[in-house]
Image 1 (cartoon, rainbow over the protein chains, first blue to last red):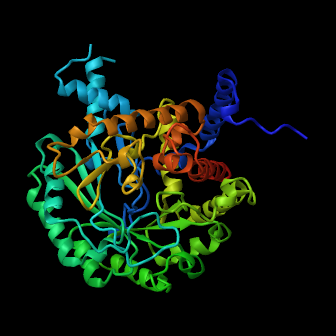
Image 2 (image 1 turned 90 degrees about the vertical axis):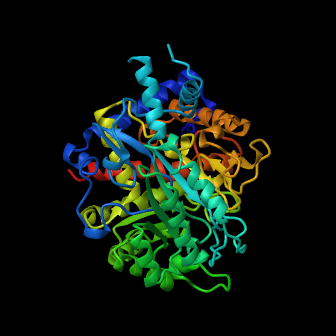
Image 3 (image 1 turned 30 degrees about the vertical axis):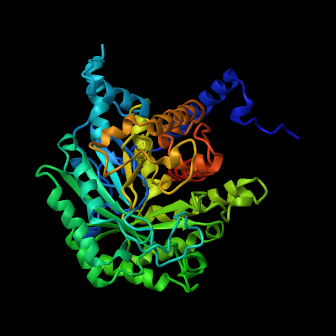
Length: 111
Length: 394
């Protein structure tokens, strides 16, 4: 019987790196193989105009905010418009934001 | 990139949007078996002073101009406060908001109290409303019952219809329990026939008051092969949904598809959940206490994080003061560690972005572990079903 695959916590950093790289490539390949028109269908103009019910449903879940090709999206919400202009970074971490805010509050320019 | 431009970008991103979760009451007319909200028989409501203080810190604050604030009434049942209270709540907001402030109102309701009059009120104030319905009676009524143990589906469905008839933006949130996974066809048919334009799913979670779920055996590795059942559910759901995607969005598919499109055009892209951003989500509890990151922290206990309270609207002069509190700093540092763990160990990070912050805490007791039962179920499995489904269209 084949060995059970190791969980990430049971691997060395090098093993983990290799496995992750392989998995990321597999995922990227899979996404890359999806026909362009299918993949962008929801990424651009959203889907059909459903009159007053559309285009956004609402859920109490917590959204994401991201940009693609200069358009801002809130996941599960409408794209662009009221989310304001694009910025140059699309992934931030709490520590980045806090550091940036603290620096501005203290009048410190990052050099 | 110029460092000052990078700094400005961080600030702009952080200030773009804040979801303000208004827990004006914990009172609920239902006693759903999986609910995580504590104190659901307490009829106390948020005072006018607390409402005003919240609005002054957000839409009434010069420093937050440019931020879109979404006020989400949520937990227990928001309609239980009565229409006069809700009208006063939104009027106060409109009165305090600075002329250039941008805000919108949203609500998550069980729909039972949603009369045509309520629906008109919500439409008049341009609310987006989510209704909690789990699907056909066999699923919904198994868990969503009132305090006398009676079913709630007929009333909830009437509420949803009233909402759509009034022209309100509506969506449905359905909780998936272990039993639901055998009913993909029935769930899809039920919601497609309802005419609701959007459907989202939450898997039954370990959160706060809800310490056990129908998935416990699966989580502990003792049950049937959970991932296989879940995968079969989403495979079937995709198959049913794709021909009808113009009629009804399914949040889980749409969000991952959008993220995948962004990832394909920019390989450095990764989703960045508002839940993981400081002040991306601010939850105000009835007494004015404030939590940030996941709203599920409201009412939760933790010695290390002082029950997750990072301030109170009555004493804060600015929401940014939250960032200087020790509780916030501890929380932020630990959450950041978990986010890094996700980025460094999970292939799905680009289309997930380390969501489900509170699930880490409630499942593992800390924030540093990357994988949760929830992300395995609602991100990885959904992504696999979606991508394979899309590839199968060829």
